[in-house]
Length: 115
Length: 114
Image (cartoon, rainbow over all chains, first blue to last red; front, side):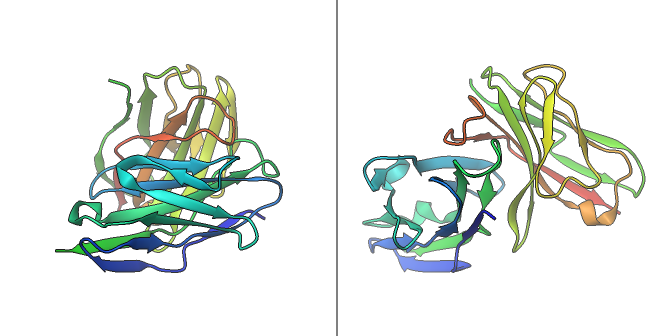
Protein backbone atom coordinates (compact mmCIF):
# COMPACT_ATOMS: atom_id res chain seq x y z
CA UNK A 1 0.00 0.00 0.00
CA UNK A 2 1.10 3.53 -0.70
CA UNK A 3 1.27 5.95 2.21
CA UNK A 4 2.73 9.23 3.36
CA UNK A 5 3.55 10.29 6.90
CA UNK A 6 4.10 13.78 8.20
CA UNK A 7 5.21 13.10 11.77
CA UNK A 8 4.72 16.65 13.04
CA UNK A 9 1.29 18.25 13.22
CA UNK A 10 2.89 21.62 13.97
CA UNK A 11 6.24 23.27 13.39
CA UNK A 12 7.08 26.60 14.98
CA UNK A 13 10.11 28.65 14.00
CA UNK A 14 11.31 32.20 14.41
CA UNK A 15 11.56 34.44 11.38
CA UNK A 16 15.02 34.25 9.85
CA UNK A 17 15.71 30.77 11.17
CA UNK A 18 15.89 27.72 8.92
CA UNK A 19 12.81 25.52 8.75
CA UNK A 20 12.25 21.85 8.04
CA UNK A 21 8.93 20.10 7.51
CA UNK A 22 9.31 16.33 7.52
CA UNK A 23 7.80 13.73 5.21
CA UNK A 24 8.37 10.01 4.88
CA UNK A 25 6.70 7.69 2.40
CA UNK A 26 6.07 4.05 1.63
CA UNK A 27 5.43 2.99 -1.97
CA UNK A 28 5.98 0.18 -4.38
CA UNK A 29 7.92 1.15 -7.46
CA UNK A 30 9.59 4.50 -8.05
CA UNK A 31 8.21 7.34 -5.91
CA UNK A 32 7.04 10.65 -7.30
CA UNK A 33 6.93 13.16 -4.47
CA UNK A 34 5.21 16.51 -4.15
CA UNK A 35 4.86 19.35 -1.68
CA UNK A 36 1.79 21.57 -1.64
CA UNK A 37 0.98 24.59 0.52
CA UNK A 38 -2.44 25.75 1.69
CA UNK A 39 -3.00 29.29 2.92
CA UNK A 40 -6.11 30.04 5.00
CA UNK A 41 -9.34 29.82 3.02
CA UNK A 42 -7.48 28.91 -0.16
CA UNK A 43 -6.95 25.83 -2.27
CA UNK A 44 -3.66 23.97 -2.35
CA UNK A 45 -0.77 25.36 -4.36
CA UNK A 46 2.03 23.30 -5.84
CA UNK A 47 5.50 24.03 -4.39
CA UNK A 48 7.85 21.46 -5.85
CA UNK A 49 8.23 17.86 -6.92
CA UNK A 50 10.77 15.09 -7.24
CA UNK A 51 10.44 12.73 -10.18
CA UNK A 52 13.99 11.64 -10.95
CA UNK A 53 17.51 13.04 -11.10
CA UNK A 54 19.11 15.40 -8.60
CA UNK A 55 18.05 14.58 -5.05
CA UNK A 56 17.85 18.27 -4.11
CA UNK A 57 14.83 19.91 -5.69
CA UNK A 58 14.21 23.65 -5.68
CA UNK A 59 10.74 25.12 -5.83
CA UNK A 60 8.66 28.23 -5.35
CA UNK A 61 9.19 30.92 -2.69
CA UNK A 62 12.72 29.75 -1.84
CA UNK A 63 11.69 26.28 -0.70
CA UNK A 64 13.66 23.18 -1.47
CA UNK A 65 13.35 19.50 -0.63
CA UNK A 66 15.79 16.64 -0.43
CA UNK A 67 14.90 13.18 -1.65
CA UNK A 68 16.57 10.46 0.41
CA UNK A 69 15.88 7.02 -0.98
CA UNK A 70 17.53 5.05 1.82
CA UNK A 71 15.50 6.87 4.47
CA UNK A 72 12.38 7.09 2.27
CA UNK A 73 12.11 10.76 3.12
CA UNK A 74 11.37 13.99 1.30
CA UNK A 75 11.78 16.80 3.83
CA UNK A 76 10.87 20.36 2.90
CA UNK A 77 13.38 23.04 3.82
CA UNK A 78 13.99 26.75 3.66
CA UNK A 79 17.17 28.48 4.82
CA UNK A 80 15.47 31.56 6.25
CA UNK A 81 11.79 31.49 7.25
CA UNK A 82 9.38 34.38 6.69
CA UNK A 83 6.22 35.18 8.62
CA UNK A 84 4.38 34.88 5.29
CA UNK A 85 5.46 31.20 5.08
CA UNK A 86 2.97 30.40 7.85
CA UNK A 87 0.53 27.94 6.28
CA UNK A 88 -0.50 24.28 6.12
CA UNK A 89 1.92 22.08 4.18
CA UNK A 90 1.08 18.76 2.57
CA UNK A 91 3.39 16.08 1.27
CA UNK A 92 1.97 13.79 -1.42
CA UNK A 93 3.15 10.73 -3.29
CA UNK A 94 2.33 8.69 -6.33
CA UNK A 95 4.48 5.97 -7.80
CA UNK A 96 5.20 3.80 -10.78
CA UNK A 97 3.84 0.91 -8.73
CA UNK A 98 0.49 2.45 -7.83
CA UNK A 99 -2.72 2.68 -9.82
CA UNK A 100 -2.41 5.39 -12.45
CA UNK A 101 -4.16 8.52 -11.28
CA UNK A 102 -3.94 7.87 -7.56
CA UNK A 103 -2.28 10.45 -5.32
CA UNK A 104 -1.79 9.98 -1.59
CA UNK A 105 -1.51 12.90 0.81
CA UNK A 106 -0.09 13.19 4.30
CA UNK A 107 -2.17 14.69 7.09
CA UNK A 108 -0.51 18.07 6.81
CA UNK A 109 1.86 20.10 8.98
CA UNK A 110 0.90 23.52 10.25
CA UNK A 111 3.91 25.83 10.00
CA UNK A 112 3.93 28.95 12.15
CA UNK A 113 6.68 31.51 11.76
CA UNK A 114 6.68 34.14 14.47
CA UNK A 115 8.25 37.59 14.09
CA UNK B 1 -6.36 33.21 -16.31
CA UNK B 2 -5.70 29.48 -15.93
CA UNK B 3 -7.83 28.21 -13.11
CA UNK B 4 -10.05 25.59 -11.55
CA UNK B 5 -13.40 26.90 -10.38
CA UNK B 6 -15.85 25.31 -7.98
CA UNK B 7 -19.42 26.23 -7.13
CA UNK B 8 -20.82 26.80 -4.67
CA UNK B 9 -18.05 27.84 -2.30
CA UNK B 10 -20.24 27.33 0.75
CA UNK B 11 -23.30 25.14 1.15
CA UNK B 12 -25.49 24.21 4.09
CA UNK B 13 -28.04 21.51 3.40
CA UNK B 14 -30.10 18.86 5.14
CA UNK B 15 -29.78 15.11 5.20
CA UNK B 16 -31.08 13.41 2.08
CA UNK B 17 -31.38 16.45 -0.17
CA UNK B 18 -29.50 15.75 -3.40
CA UNK B 19 -26.80 18.24 -4.32
CA UNK B 20 -24.19 18.82 -6.97
CA UNK B 21 -20.88 20.64 -6.63
CA UNK B 22 -19.59 21.81 -9.98
CA UNK B 23 -15.95 21.88 -11.03
CA UNK B 24 -14.58 23.40 -14.20
CA UNK B 25 -11.07 23.94 -15.55
CA UNK B 26 -9.95 26.07 -18.48
CA UNK B 27 -6.52 24.51 -19.04
CA UNK B 28 -7.55 21.64 -21.32
CA UNK B 29 -6.37 19.18 -18.69
CA UNK B 30 -7.09 15.51 -19.20
CA UNK B 31 -7.01 14.54 -15.53
CA UNK B 32 -9.41 15.72 -12.84
CA UNK B 33 -9.96 14.61 -9.28
CA UNK B 34 -12.06 15.27 -6.18
CA UNK B 35 -10.72 15.29 -2.63
CA UNK B 36 -12.19 15.88 0.79
CA UNK B 37 -10.20 17.50 3.55
CA UNK B 38 -10.96 16.70 7.17
CA UNK B 39 -9.03 17.83 10.27
CA UNK B 40 -6.34 15.35 11.20
CA UNK B 41 -6.93 13.25 8.08
CA UNK B 42 -5.38 15.40 5.37
CA UNK B 43 -6.77 15.08 1.86
CA UNK B 44 -8.41 11.89 0.74
CA UNK B 45 -9.20 11.14 -2.87
CA UNK B 46 -12.88 10.52 -3.65
CA UNK B 47 -12.98 9.97 -7.40
CA UNK B 48 -10.76 10.78 -10.32
CA UNK B 49 -11.03 10.90 -14.08
CA UNK B 50 -8.26 10.34 -16.55
CA UNK B 51 -10.27 11.61 -19.51
CA UNK B 52 -13.78 12.09 -20.82
CA UNK B 53 -16.06 9.19 -19.89
CA UNK B 54 -13.29 7.59 -17.78
CA UNK B 55 -13.76 7.74 -14.01
CA UNK B 56 -12.53 5.63 -11.12
CA UNK B 57 -12.80 5.36 -7.37
CA UNK B 58 -10.33 6.81 -4.92
CA UNK B 59 -10.03 6.10 -1.21
CA UNK B 60 -13.48 7.25 -0.07
CA UNK B 61 -16.03 6.96 -2.90
CA UNK B 62 -19.01 5.80 -0.82
CA UNK B 63 -21.94 8.21 -1.02
CA UNK B 64 -20.58 10.12 -4.01
CA UNK B 65 -21.02 10.00 -7.76
CA UNK B 66 -19.17 11.76 -10.56
CA UNK B 67 -19.46 12.14 -14.28
CA UNK B 68 -17.12 13.39 -16.99
CA UNK B 69 -19.11 14.15 -20.10
CA UNK B 70 -16.95 17.07 -21.15
CA UNK B 71 -13.24 17.56 -20.72
CA UNK B 72 -13.56 20.77 -18.73
CA UNK B 73 -16.23 19.73 -16.22
CA UNK B 74 -16.21 17.18 -13.43
CA UNK B 75 -19.23 17.56 -11.11
CA UNK B 76 -19.45 15.82 -7.74
CA UNK B 77 -22.91 14.51 -6.89
CA UNK B 78 -24.20 13.60 -3.45
CA UNK B 79 -27.45 11.71 -4.06
CA UNK B 80 -28.45 11.53 -0.39
CA UNK B 81 -26.08 13.57 1.76
CA UNK B 82 -25.45 12.56 5.35
CA UNK B 83 -23.80 14.47 8.21
CA UNK B 84 -20.58 12.46 7.85
CA UNK B 85 -20.14 14.12 4.46
CA UNK B 86 -19.71 17.49 6.11
CA UNK B 87 -16.26 18.47 4.90
CA UNK B 88 -14.14 20.75 2.75
CA UNK B 89 -14.06 19.56 -0.84
CA UNK B 90 -11.43 20.30 -3.45
CA UNK B 91 -11.43 19.70 -7.15
CA UNK B 92 -8.09 19.44 -8.95
CA UNK B 93 -6.81 18.95 -12.47
CA UNK B 94 -3.53 18.16 -14.16
CA UNK B 95 -2.22 18.06 -17.67
CA UNK B 96 -2.41 14.31 -18.01
CA UNK B 97 -2.94 11.28 -15.89
CA UNK B 98 0.78 10.78 -15.58
CA UNK B 99 1.66 10.15 -11.97
CA UNK B 100 4.39 12.80 -12.07
CA UNK B 101 2.24 15.81 -13.01
CA UNK B 102 1.45 18.42 -10.40
CA UNK B 103 -2.19 19.19 -9.78
CA UNK B 104 -3.97 22.54 -9.85
CA UNK B 105 -6.57 22.95 -7.14
CA UNK B 106 -9.82 24.85 -6.99
CA UNK B 107 -10.64 27.18 -4.07
CA UNK B 108 -12.68 24.59 -2.20
CA UNK B 109 -16.33 24.04 -1.27
CA UNK B 110 -17.25 23.93 2.38
CA UNK B 111 -20.25 21.64 2.80
CA UNK B 112 -22.31 21.28 5.96
CA UNK B 113 -24.98 18.57 6.12
CA UNK B 114 -27.43 18.97 9.01
